[in-house]
Image 1 (tube, helix red, strand yellow):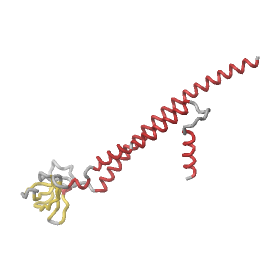
Image 2 (tube, one colour; image 1 turned 90 degrees about the horizontal axis):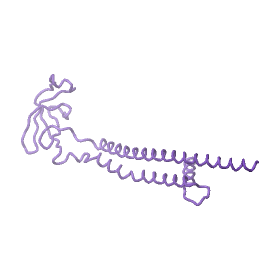
Image 3 (spheres, one colour; image 1 turned 90 degrees about the vertical axis):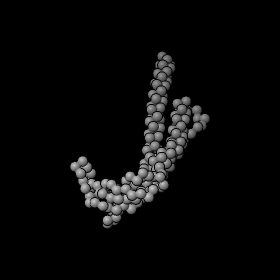
Length: 195
């Protein structure tokens, strides 16, 4: 814990604005870049929250009126798997289920969509009475939202870090050129005094 605190204090000392005569213009520019990067990462929280909200969507509430309905279905036939559906592992089952408007529909339902309980089963249907996939669970939606927020924050952090690394590399090159020029100037002055 102390090493982290020392690292933070050293960073604050390095980049704090002061009137130190030994600080060069490039040091002040670098401090401004670090502050801008920190601000950009903090501002990325808002887009991350929006991405999480969009990924969560309606969540389990999306199964409300006009979306999906859970109905009791009666199984009228055994499981079948046609040659065309050979890639489907569980096949399909003939079933009859009520519609939201009070009618009844019969048809083949993929076995993966049925929640079986003996001869009866439950089935999720859409607003038009067609079999639909069940709404996602709250844990799945929360995980999607968390991954979306993490992705946005990671992208913002990676972009900010890349910009900072490139800017520091450019500043370092300018510093090295300035040091070389200063040493060359000092060398010329020192040689004159020897003669």
